[in-house]
Image (cartoon, rainbow, N blue to C red; front, side, top):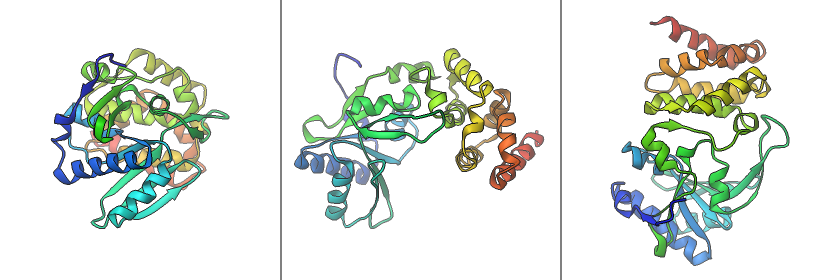
Length: 270
């Protein structure tokens, strides 16, 4: 992490006022409960990329579900909770959604399995993320509002326009990260760094894509097909051998088969 604390409160002020006020309210709520609240995920990353992103994700050092419950009551919102993962979805009266998660660690019993989770620190929570560019966290508690935490040189990689994993087992633990690496590379005009690309190719060659359920594969393919221009990520997946690896799953899973047919049509368009 950078040794000199950086406050990006000024950057947060680029957000719509109602979103900024929600983040401040989250910090006050967490403070009153003895927790620490952080804005995390794409919203923080995209502030540095100067891209619009109003997906609000809040990580709580403490009890994320307890925090979400109180915040929901205070704001007259609906609440959906997922006890197994320590996460919750808050739906405000105007329909705006906030995702809340207890800061946590994740372990994988076997490759491509869903993770086992337990509470952890905000640094633990960042370490479980897919890529360095997604490991920025911003303090929301009143006395630390806007303080940026950058444990894994995310800002450096954003400046270098690199997609980089945090550890060598990343694609073994969760092969869906391969789809996301390609998506971020093409969406942002970044480059998957050399070590990360080698890890992708190794994971594909070792058959870890085939261990994913049809549901998880189809979910990632749908997201890619919703990109503004899906052709570059589709072709990159093909170049990395991912589409060939997925083809076997398409023989047994109707949704995957349908999505692969759509991908083939896109490939033939140019």
